[in-house]
Image (cartoon, rainbow, N blue to C red):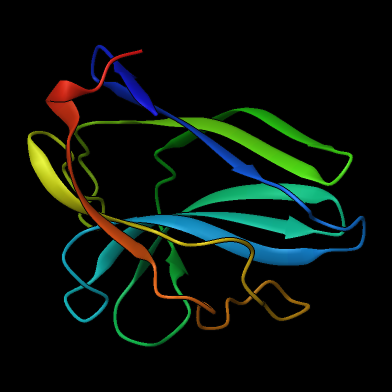
Length: 140
C-alpha cells in the first residue's frame, strides 16, 4: 500500500489458491461492523477476480456502494497466486465511504474466506487484523 497525491494504492496478494478456489478477502475502514465499515472486497470465483466497493453494518453481507470509488488496474491469477492492484481516493464524496486522511482504523481480512456460489460473503473464518493507519506517513 502507498499513497501518491490524494490516491491510495493497494496490492492484495493471496497464495495457495487452487484453480477452482472461491472466496473473499477485504480491507475495511472504520471502527467496527456494528457502527458500519466502508469495505473493499476482493472475490475469487474459479480463477476470476472481482474487486468491489461496499458497505457493511452488523453481521450481514455487505451491500455494493451506489458509486464505485475503487479503480482496478491489475488482476492476476497464476500458479495459485492471486494479485489484485487497485486504488481509491483518500477523500470521498459518497455517504458510505470513509475519509481516509490522517489516522483511522483499518481492518484486514486474513486469507480467503467462504462465500456462497452467488458471491454472498459468509462470516470471516479468522478475526481480521485491526490497525490504525496514518495515511500521511505512507508513500509510493
